[in-house]
Image (cartoon, rainbow, N blue to C red; front, side):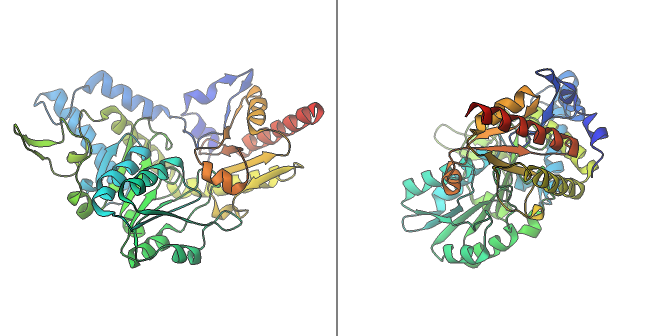
Length: 410
């Protein structure tokens, strides 16, 4: 496993005490904590380089532009895109997916066409496609899940047809932890002439992304889940597709020439980045990428598999506890979603919080999946690079406390 003691030393917030207990942070699926390297990179920009980009010719403007565009190149390398023109900075995964739906979707989807997603999608990878289907008259279809919460390629082939124009699938489920066979799904989509959109929000922090190897057409992810700041994300798109798409935000930064009645746009990637961009966020994201790559994405993935396996083994000893998703830890990321019989997930989370343990409880922005699971809500522990087996042991002890307390109540 990773040297979590050393890694934790870079995260100031992990020194906190919560309700009289050392903080055990198990909610990285919602947002990860930030290392000092990221905090200092953002601080340095505001202290020494703060200026707008692509506008001034003065020293600060040049330094800010160099850092901002350097961050774009850093992202390009991180996902192995062919060109930095294929990297669009956005507010996050949600904005990135909406951009594809509103720009590519409205131009290429019509009545009678199909859009295909799965039951395990986050709301941000459902609602944009619902809206696109309503506007265009297209049909929104769902790939059904196997009993263990995985996707079978047989059902993928049954659902995608020659009428399918867009397939959009999460790489790693934020609830089940399921790691989907994106490369194979992409090939099936392409065989039918459809484009492949990948929600990489839960994948980018935990495993090595290679958009050329995956051959996906679009990929979206957020900085805040991978040790970066909030409010910054990425839309990757193949250059030919992005080049043919129209921007959906108009104003400064993204224009080439503005006349009284007509305007023209800058070339890629800037035509999709209207207004003052998220400069500090991009710089912070670049620092986060440096931090993660120094640890090693393959080592991070291995660590999470081992931690998930340990957690599932220990949690399975608690009577009345149900774990959702693949039972094989190698088929899931470091996410364990569960319920305790007769105890509401919010009550479980409250008891854990009183012991300094932070988990997520609710529908996890995945209500269609909750319906598929026949659950109104679940509890979720999501692990990351700063978590250890000791954190799992504290979680299990806290769950036993919750079970005993509510067992006495009921």
